Length: 65
Ligand SMILES: [Zn+2]
Image 1 (cartoon, rainbow, N blue to C red):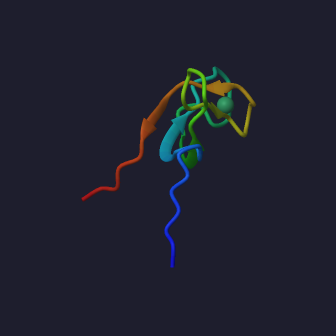
Image 2 (image 1 turned 90 degrees about the vertical axis):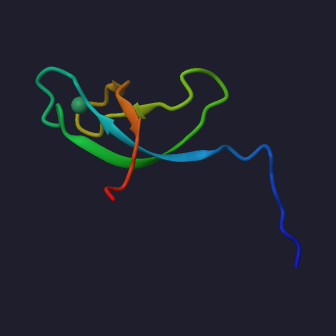
């Protein structure tokens, strides 16, 4: 059994994205999702599923202890 490590595989991270678009139904509503790193900045990009705007408020998801 071989364990393969692919350095080129994009790292994924579970982040909490919060839309801050004025008037958006999801404004201020945190949305947890899995995001994959981009080769270029910004590393993680989120898009609001309600208004389609780019979400810049992405923070690491931490489970409450
Ligand atoms: Zn939105």
